[in-house]
Length: 227
Image (tube, rainbow, N blue to C red; front, side, top):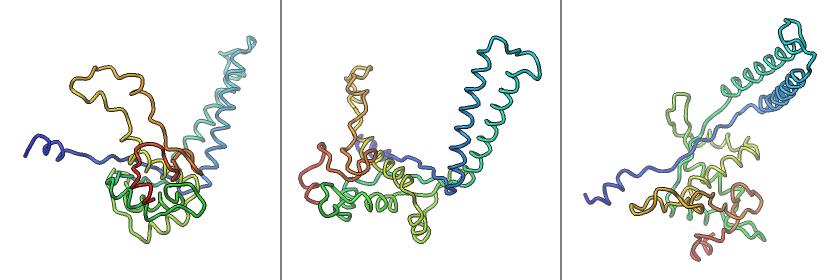
């Protein structure tokens, strides 16, 4: 095997994990608990700035404020533990370039929309074909088609956006990162252009994920005709 072939044999597909809590009520409770913790922290700061506050006395305002903060922190920790128990983790893997572009042609733009593909169907189409379930021990499991159907049915807009961002990250964003430092003859310190974030695909409806809009870079004319 050639040196090039040896490197190809070591190739690892890019992936990223997306954790989703399936209990929406817990997510709402967490927001309230976070707000409560922030207020408790502010109260502690205010009391500590009061020169008349006795920080040594057991029943002092500062001790009372600290106890409120500790209680709020414990409530938040308990809710987050419940959320972990009610969550699933999906591992999104990059797909080959040819497949990614084929998937775009199978999810054509909506009528009257200036987009490369239909973002409302494309990301779930890719996720169904590239995601696996990761259990608490880190083991990967294929997702049954019927289980995925149920997962899609109850998916919220925010959860869909998380999946979309993950798909764009592993299939496009990581590949667009600066790689000049990989050259054996390059300097060890990257240039400012290499350390800056690569431009995200121009967004239509979903700005964070790219949402199927036509990016101005890397797309060939063939791909644009296909999508």
